[in-house]
Length: 254
Image (cartoon, rainbow, N blue to C red; front, side, top):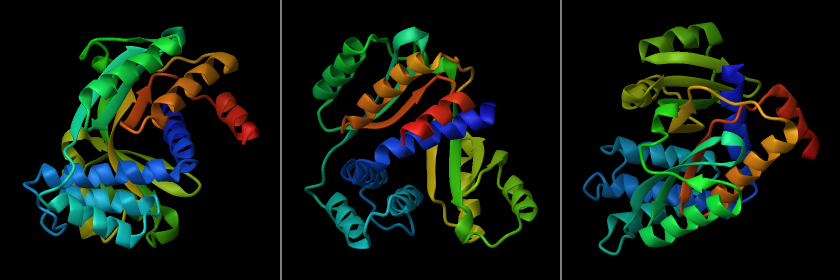
């Protein structure tokens, strides 16, 4: 069940973002900008692994090639936007913990916005570090089955060599998990295997999840979506158990 709930969480977040392609692109551009800024304004993906990963993620949300190239050119120049990464921790309704990752050009605006979303939706913003222990940071790689020509069992063996900790085999994708410290190693290993990722990112996986009745769980998902709607928010993680029953209820809504 734990594996299913992780993937359900990814699917929910991805589904919410798919409705807002403009915001997806904004977030992808921020990831490209930060990858270049944190590597001495290096806009060459051949020598900047973080940028290669950001480009791949941008492709994963179907960002056009010319948009990606413009983002790289702008981020490499003197007039590049300056972003700061911030994290927030707090509780939503029903004791569900939230961990919010942001990339912003205005920290005061972001702090006020995150606090407001919590307070208007029955939650409360906590202090940094107060809830981080509830999550385990992992590298998460999503591979599109349609473009992989390897046998699954053979692929598993190859991925274990690169530091894979666990696997999930889903209808359309393979999801692989690594230790946080092995993220770069796995990204390089996949490149060596000529396997392009649909998405690659660091996630905060809840160590324990809480299952709620459907109506209460919907409150949590609505709160998660409000955070997702904020342009400064890059990722939202929480401790809600996304059960089979809840997944079915979400499917019925769609």
